[in-house]
Length: 79
Image (cartoon, rainbow, N blue to C red; front, side):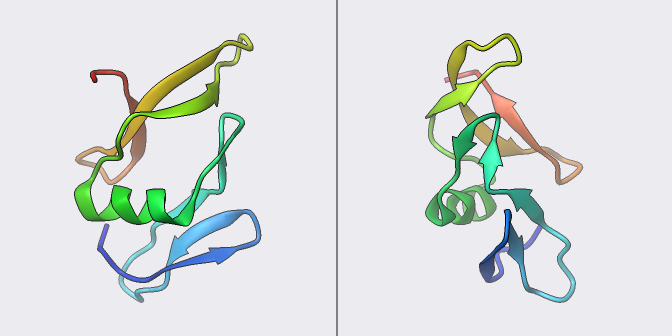
């Protein structure tokens, strides 16, 4: 994952750097993501703690997003 130019498309944020394949949904578990949050995620490999996510059981929760060693985005409940 690079720190390239993030663009907003229908339903996604994605990097337009030719060598990068980063693409993420605008909505993650019911939470609408902001372009600035995705830019922070790519730059720092982690976001601050974000609220507004909804579990599969219908419960709200907060978590950070981070990029793991394989370049995948995952939740981080450690904060």
